[in-house]
Amino acid sequence: MSYIVRRGLSTLIPPKIASPQGIGGAPDAARMSRVVKFYERLPRGPAEVPKPRGLVERYSARYMGDNPSAAPMWHTIGALGLLGYGFNYYFHLRTPGFPKNNRFN
Image 1 (cartoon, rainbow, N blue to C red):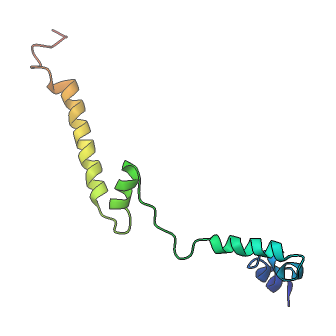
Image 2 (cartoon, rainbow, N blue to C red):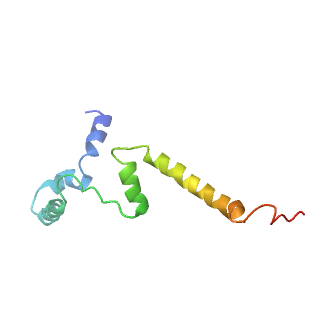
Image 3 (cartoon, helix red, strand yellow):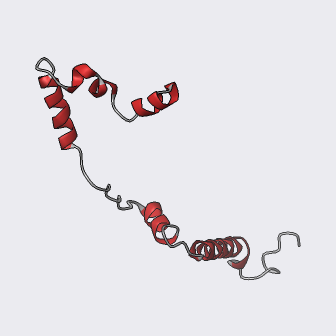
């Protein structure tokens, strides 16, 4: 058996379990029972998909998850339009008229 094959197989089995002393025998029975109990307590089956928490995670899961859509692009365009209108209103549209408030006359 080549070194590469042995190295590949050694990564599959934890080293303390794969050693001949760890497999059987009365002196290591307590240690093996602890290892068996540890592996029995591990969860089986596929891991649960975590539910999104928070505003950004829910938005990302809804519009950019399994079925992505173009809605985030339209939301960005709408948000920038509202922001632009807000700036325009604050700096220009809230005054009653230009000739009245002209500072340069």
